[in-house]
Length: 100
Image 1 (tube, rainbow, N blue to C red):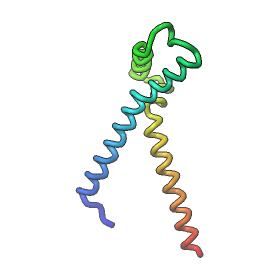
Image 2 (cartoon, rainbow, N blue to C red):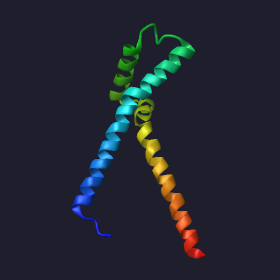
Image 3 (cartoon, helix red, strand yellow):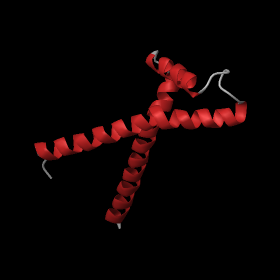
Image 4 (cartoon, rainbow, N blue to C red):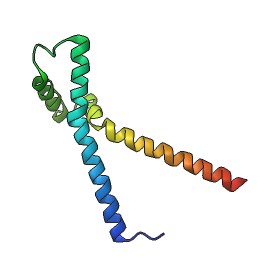
């Protein structure tokens, strides 16, 4: 199947939208969940609230802290690993069927 520019543009647009949505989730929703679980387990974050937690998290992200970058990018990385795993299983099944 030859690649045409329209299908490449459509795929790039879909992947870009997916990346942006999952990074938004990693920037907003995931830290909120981490904060709420931490608050219920350990108590209030350093005597401050949610905004202080977000401020600390975002400043650490811009400083390039690996743990924070992993937190923010983890939804996208998990999604890509899931896709890769499914692709691998399909390839293995296809090869087994071809050998029989």
